[in-house]
Every structure is written in structure tokens, then in C-alpha cells.
Image (cartoon, rainbow, N blue to C red; front, top):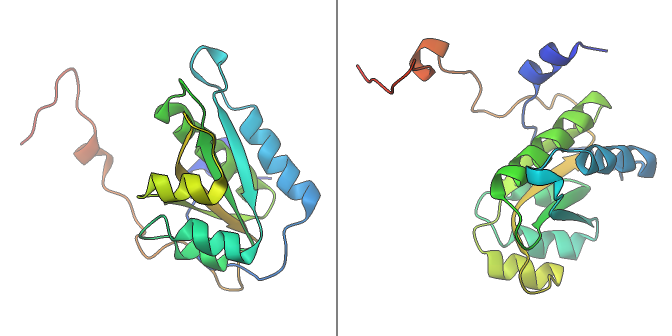
Length: 167
């Protein structure tokens, strides 16, 4: 098993999946990792909707503009922000689930839902909740690599000390 630091540096979004369903025990492990994610004041103001029905996945994907990974994955996890939840916590939740999935051999791709009303209708969400993000998840297809948007900016272009100084 890779050490944690190396594991974090190597995590990439994968957009090509095998068509086979995800083993229930493996999916449970990913959801459990989500459950244990830290949150503001430990409120855990989130819930998940696991989507495996092809028609529901298609409808869910229609709430976003770049959601083809959801259409092609055997499952998607809709990340539901409960009332008084924080978007920052939802981001932490997504990252933990994606790292857990990668650690057990699953591939993931985060997606943004641009039409929250449509997503809420598809998922049957109660008033006061929202779904802005989801995760496509499955076994990586043979030869599936990281997204075409690979590489990273040099650290020197990203880090500022004490004040933001451009130049």
C-alpha cells in the first residue's frame, strides 16, 4: 500500500470505467470513509444518494454540463448538503471518498451540478437540502489514465508569503 502522502499526490480523476457493478462491500467502504470525514463543529450536515439505475444516472447527469463520467460509470454518489451545511465540508467529503476509493482500486471523477433544482427533483430532495456535487465511481477501464488536464503549476506560482503579491 502506498504511503498516505504518495497516495494523495497520485490521486487523479478518471473518466473511463468498466461496465461491471461495484462490489457492495467496496462501495460501503467508500461511504464509510465519507461518514468519518471531519466537518465544521462535527455537524456532519451531509448525506449521500447512491445512484446505480441507468435512467436515474442519466437524469442526474443532465443537471450538469460536464457530467459524462456519471453517464459512463456504474454508479454515482450524489453529495447532499443538509440544512446549515457548508460547501467547504462537502469538498472535504468528496476528497475523502475519492481517496478511499482509489486506495481500494476504484476510480472516481468529481462532477458539478449546475442546475441544482433539476438535481433536487431527480433525487427527490427535501426542501432546505441541495446537491451541487457528485462523484462518478467504478472500476477503471483498461488503460484508463488521468484526465487530459494533467500536470501541475510550479509551487512558486501558487505560494505567497504574508501577502498576495503578483509579479
